[in-house]
Amino acid sequence: MNIQKLKMYFTMVTNALLRRKLRMFIALLAVAIGATIISGMITVYKEVPEQMGREFRAYGANLLLLPASGTTTIQEVKLPAVYQRLQGHEIVGSAPFLYERMKINESPVLVGGTDFDMVKKVSPYWQINGAMPAADKEILLGHELAEKFQAKPGEKIILALGDGSWESPFTVSGIVRTGGKEEQFAYMDLKQMQEIVNKPGVISMAQVSVVANAAELDAFARQMAEEEPSIHPQTVKQIASSEQTVLGKLQALVLLVTVVVLLLTLVCVGTTMTEVVSERRKEIGLKKALGADNRNIAAEFFGESCMLGLLGGILGTVCGYLFAQAVGTNVFGRSLQLSIPIAVMSVVLSILVTAIATMLPVRTAVKVEPAIVMRGE
Image (tube, rainbow, N blue to C red; front, side, top):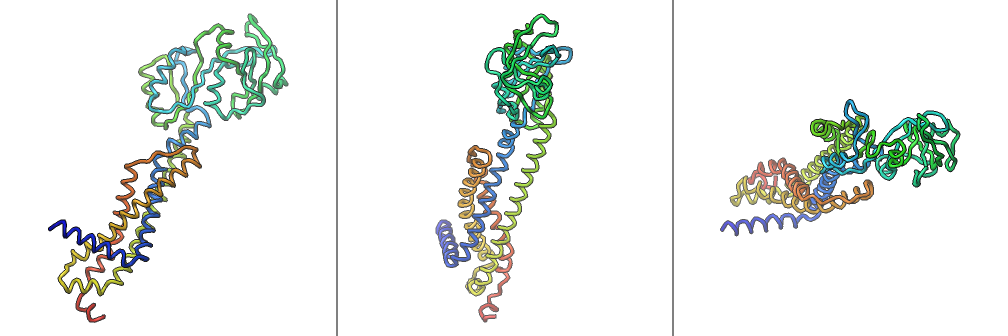
């Protein structure tokens, strides 16, 4: 008996929707558009921190690994264990550096040995006139240093240790511009540098570019300070805080747009259902005259709105995923994963919004007096 009643109720609701195709199509379209924006925006909201985190890595490292207090170098063999502790976060790159005071053409300068393949990943903002060192006895000069020595790519310079125990001619492979202190330094291959200064397997610091927010980096730094006393992790506050600020504003904007779309959907569906109730006053009055109570009338209208919400939510969720994919591909250059919880939430939210929008029209419907309506008043 209950199944028959449910089947009859479903048939009645479906026929009521089909009898007013144009109005219901407009309401369905409003719900679908709302669900599209909601599901798409929530997907983007969820993915923005990770995707924008990758974009921010173009501005340089956000984590420095420095020697602990009382020491000046770090053993390279300890770095893999450090990176292991960052499991769960994407490490874009890690560039080691060994700095030593040396002489170029008899003038004291600070020279850094590094892995240039990693520098390209960690510091993609480096602008090179020429090329990075790719062979033995090639050196990269900072712009200020090149101006001082009037050096150009392809020219020779004399590189020497400060105590005069070693010197050799080097070819300037390129000149680097960064807008920072790097323009005051010279750079060469790390292994070659370690061999010249007789410091095999050690570095002065490492710059790490990792996809993580400021809170996660601070937590990692505290953990490292306890577990590895020879290494002092330090977050690059300016980059980490700027990243957090921008991400927070973007997420707030996405949330605001989602709320506005919800309200617009609410108004559109509510207006449509109010007009439907106005058109069906005689039908409502007749049903009441035949014995239908307020609960039956309310159930019918809520059933219609919830069916609209279900159909519009499903359609909008599919379109929302396609919208989020387009944003991910065109803005971030990456495809986004379909999130089942977001899809379910979008459909449920669509049903909830249409149900709330129907409350006022239902209140009007249940107040219809059969006798007055049947008299044509």
